[in-house]
Image (cartoon, rainbow, N blue to C red):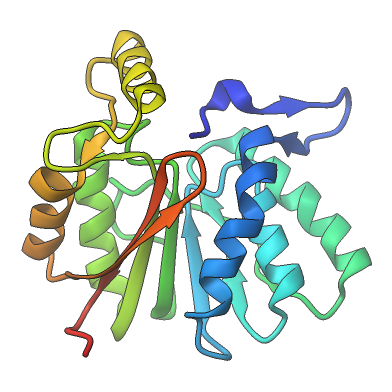
Length: 219
């Protein structure tokens, strides 16, 4: 559960550091390792500090990764992390970050995407951002592509932990349009409207979930 308040930056260094990203990057990598096809082109929406996608690109050099964010400070952080990665792992296939705001059309993509990732965004944004994300993903994903969401979710109107309920209250106090989204009552119906099917729900540490939404039915 990352917010901009979790990000810290050293003096004169544009790289941002997210404790939450450091904690969850390994479990998220494990999810991707067993599901990404070799050579898949992966776009991360709202990459934040860039630590997630740097880790994935380092550990999965057979895949192509495209970071993005709407915030200039995040884009600067991603570029700085990318320079480090180029020195330490020159085989990593990492694109320069895109300035991408989900609600602005057209998205700055010249090629279609196999997989999209969006971690810890939909609860720290107005609900319209989720609808815009789903619409953009439906437009740019390949017909057999999928979207992976990660974060805290309600299930059928119930928080999955007291900590999630407290987090929801803190988000609402900051902006009444924010909050932990209900998977069955809100997210999945909106995904269906956008042309997605629920492919998989994956239990993650710290009462979080990965929700994989597919463009087609999986058997």
